[in-house]
View (spheres, each protein chain N blue to C red):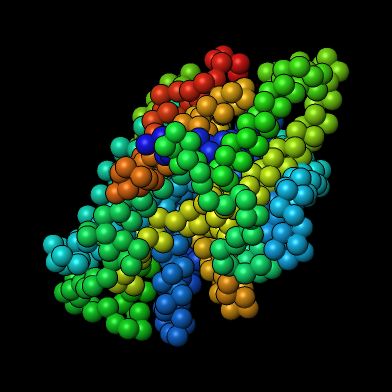
Amino acid sequence: MLTILFDGIAYGMLLFVLACGLAVTLGLMNFVNLAHGAFAMAGGYCTVILVNRWGVPFFAALPLAFLVSALLGLILERSLYVHVYRKSHLDQVLFTIGLVFMSVAAVDYVMGSGQMFVRLPDWLQGQFNVFGIGVGRYRLLIIIVCGVLTLALQLILSRTRFGSRLRAAVDDTRVARGLGIRVDAVFAVTFAVGSGLAGLGGALGTEIVGLDPAFPLKFMIYFLIVVTVGGTTSITGPFLASLLLGIGDVAGKYYVPTLGAFVIYTIMIVVLIVRPQGLFSRGGVR
Amino acid sequence: MKSSAPNQLKGSFETRARWQPLEVLFWVAAFASYYFLPGKHLILTEIAILALFALSLDLILGYAGIVSLGHAAFFGFGAYVAGLLAKHQLVTEPLLALLLAGLAAMLLGFVTSFLVLRGSDLTRIMVTLGVALVLREIANRYAWLTGGADGLQGVSMDPLLGLFRFDMFGRTAHAYTLIVLFVLFLLARRIVNSPFGLSLQAIKGNALRAAAVGVAVNARLVAVYTMAAFYAGIAGALLTQTTAFASLDVFSFERSADLLLVLIIGGTGYLYGGLIGAIVFKLMQDYLSALTPQYWPFWIGLVLVVIVLVGRDRFSSWTLPLRRLAARLDWRAQLPRRSVGGGG
């Protein structure tokens, strides 16, 4: 029972790191980025190549995965995404779906269509017991890493100048622009960091959620659920939503395997109908 | 002048609805393909089904401005209903089964239409996507009914109207889908040229103002969404009937996404967009997947990205010369100039 809760929390934390970049992108530029999962996949494959082929230690590979995804995000943002911000949602959806399809096929071409696994250090494998609860070492690591990241993000957002600029831009882009905040630059940085975090999530997640070329398609809906249920105006909303989704998904698969995934889909639809702006969002911004 | 206003109005509707020579040519060519391309029945059938499906999306996207990422929900629902009806020998007459499948999808469309009324584009995208995913999951879980991941096998039907047997060369299937497409196209053409169709365009332009001039926005959207679901259901049922098989693939996200591409290639909001898009898309797919079968999605993706970057309006204007030509060829009246190209 508690083991399931523990696994669920680890899964939820992972989802949060994967999806928080999307929440900010959506909140900031009102941009529907369905290709967010592609950056996570990039991070995952980057780690696989670094660790399995080049023998880089796992912990050195994680920051590299972050950097590679962030760089990829930055390049794509500056070269392609900037042209699409002002277009309609339909265009944004078409564009990002196009990117997803391209990334899926390209990774399939380069890396093959099979599942990928990262060779983990021995001391991260297996589990130990604490008061009768089975605690997976790797999952504990995920919780620690993601927890630290979440705290850091929260602090950056609430305490730094960049954070207040970002929040101002999310709340009202036009006024923020009028106050001299360079919203475009803020957005480029945020996009890169968001992509980087997704890449880090992908790198950490290979062991838990698997990694294959269809990754961006499979997890697109999860990211969207996190963002819609959590709302896009804060970082705590998506965080709580991720935890709920993670615990709900793990528990659901364990207790009622016959119902499978459509519990969460149904919950998403209901939430969207009842509160289109998200469960945890502050109302009335837009 | 005042007394002639209704007459003028009637006249303008008649002008809009008038058949242009190029349209006639299009349909003559479509039916001629049955005789002149005898080896191509299978792909032509696929094109006709895709065209009908795209027509369905055009009704809600091109005319009413509803962005849907889960239109495959209705396609798949129609496909499975038709398959189950035939498999369990409930309704063995294909045409009747087709109608029933369409009506079933229509019912689903009516029920889910209330979900797309609320919220922004993003909400709509996700709700439609969610509905398609839920249906796929249901079809996957209830394997005793639907065959699960193996697909629905053992679909067999009586000859069409008791006369025409579905042959292995796909001759009957081709004629059948083409005629169904034509009939439903006529219906759609009638609808979009009616005052109802105009009011939809008004809603797409600005829902608030449409409401202000007295258009019942929500009722119209429900109506057109329900009708589009009917069309999609028929398209799905045609696929099951002509291939005697239905699989989970009918609900897939890729199918909805491909459909958007089809419509974007042809251009939205003038009915022929879906038909032309379907032809181009299938030919392209045929050619490219012969080159690299596994990596075909890459090219779809590339086309999507390029189209958006170039600009959808500019892109779909490749059909503009054709449409201009159509207008010029019309010897009976000068058409009022209408804006072309998509939006949404």
